[in-house]
Image 1 (cartoon, rainbow, N blue to C red):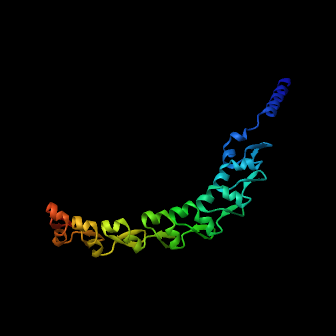
Image 2: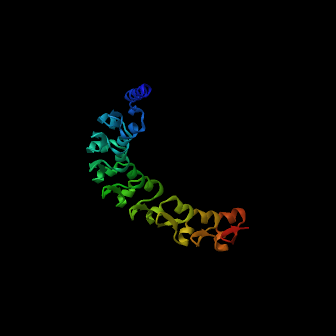
Image 3: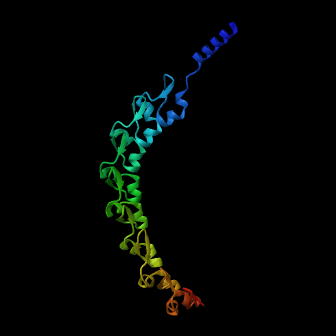
Length: 232
C-alpha cells in the first residue's frame, strides 16, 4: 500500500513539474501570433505577437483581441501583402477589402494584368484605360477591356511585331490572327518565303505566283508552291 501511495505521489509531482510548451518555438507563433502561454494553451497576448506573424504580414491580422490576431483598422490591412498585391487595404468585418480605385492602381495586379478599378470589394478590369496601365499592354498588346480581362484590339495587333512578321493583324480574343490575304501580302513571310495567301488560318504559298515574287525564289530557286510552301 505504501508503495502505491509513493508512486501516486511521484506521478503527481511529475505532473506538477511538467514544463509548459515553449509557444515561441511552435508553428502557431510564426503563423498565428500565438506566442505566449496562457494557462495550458498558447495565445496571442500583444500586438507585437501579431505583428510578427504570417497572418499580419500576408493578410493584415495585426492587432490582438481576446487571445487572437484580428483586423482592427485600415492600418492593419495596409501592412499586409494583400494590400500591395490585391488592393485589400480597408478593414471591414475582420476582412480587408477594396473600397476605391485608389486601392487598385498601385497594386501588382494593376501593373501586370490591368485590374485597376474597384468593383464589389475587389480590383477588376473595367476599362481600356485599366488595360493600358498594364505591362500586358506595353509588352503583349493586351490593351482592350472585354469580359473582365484585357484582350487584343485590332489596332493593337496591327502595331504588334507579329503583324509585320507573320500577318497576324486582327484581334480574336487574346490572340492576334491572320484576317485576310492582304495581311499575308504585307508580311515579312510573304516577301521572304512566298507565304502570301491566307489558307486555313495561316499565311501560305497558294500558287507559283506567290513564290515567284519572294526572296526564296530569287535566291534559292524555290519558285513552285507545293503543300503551302515554296520549293524547287
